[in-house]
Length: 334
Image (cartoon, rainbow, N blue to C red; front, side, top):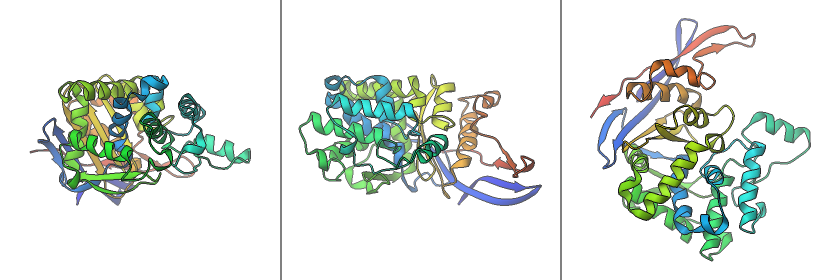
């Protein structure tokens, strides 16, 4: 496995973290890599921008008056902060639906302050606070627009999920037989492909003009919504929000559980997919910053814009620095 980061306790190496990176162009050519770019990888929530294409192409956005801000939360793994919950609730109400129609499962919010507030008030976890509630709301709207069974939209063989499979195949340049499906934490299918194919999907979303008129418009709506409303895509203290808030004119990005990260370099037809093998997502901001610097997308001086997301120092309970995290990789040209 390829070493991407190391933790030091004092001056002594303590822990090693491994991963893989693929940088692909619109046609799926590997431009740069680190580790195995062909390893089978689950995109997890990194597929949400692709999954939202089905909603945008259906006509449901127009039928229910869904705004770009609401579309951003449909693409989100949101914190469950009050702003996120209000947006998802509003989306459902526009379609005559409610939280009871969501099949994502009940969850406390990711955002710790909001979670503690709910617990203090004696409130149980619920579907609206689930980080995937926006995605599920989008799937529900698509199914309702087409007059399909709303209780079945999460099933792998449902029309909702079959449309999504076809879209992922088009964007990632693969056949349905190449996609390995399992079940995500929120109950809908999750998709695995070789890492460079997932990067290809982000590459195609970054230059949608070549996707055909309908798909191009849908992808452009998604990318513009995510970069215009980065808070809605994640929330306070999250990498996606900070990265697009600072560099959204250059890129769009989306995290996935299990330390997956996807980035599209806007208008360049270049996509990036990252997987940290041990799922230690605390290293992802440092890896992403180093990666974008090596590719010349950002300068090292611009790292300071994400200092709230990446501090290489390790602190003890007294807030004394007792070690540090070191990012260690160099991209290899193919």
